[in-house]
Length: 269
Image 1: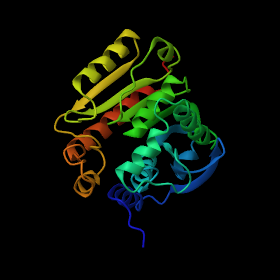
Image 2: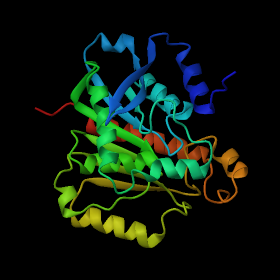
Image 3: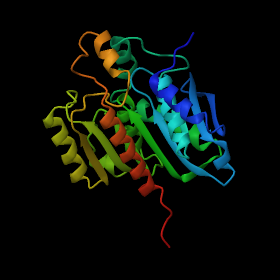
């Protein structure tokens, strides 16, 4: 029997009182690779017109129940959410080495933004979304991915990176960016030393991008995932590197909602 992660179970429980939430797997393809994404939306709200859309990109583990749960949570907030598949239908990592190999093929590779764009195309192609009100969020590897997607010039109003690897902007990439940027970073995340953070912030300031960099006290890498503590115990080398922070999870999710309220606000006449 399949066991759901905490995030998906919580999200589906929240949905129980609102039967209008629709979830479905979506098969698509990119570069000859068969992919399977996950779509979630409130059917009742789509009857009032096109909704803001949010692309969701998974951690290095792959498109698992945790990320699907986030898509359902977004649907409960009134967004059309599409969780993209970066690896291939049914491909999930079972240990950090495998996860590193899967995510590593995209590092510094234009394929990262291109594969994410394929997911964005699926979201917009639903016909449920207002193309002028689309954002992308990502977790860890997915956080880096949505940055790469923004740097490619994708038509996004904004991106949110949750404990994602930091990709500094260049004059060339910044010139293509259409999105406002929110970076949610753990204060105790050992994946980014202070020198790297400083270099990243300098690149954002030098290129005059519209960004916010929010640091959450006491938060390690992967602070939004309720399974992080168990994974830290399960896999040698991850203890002291990843960890769940309920407060940082809650605060960053609220910061994302405030950010969306800003970027999706109707244009002033």
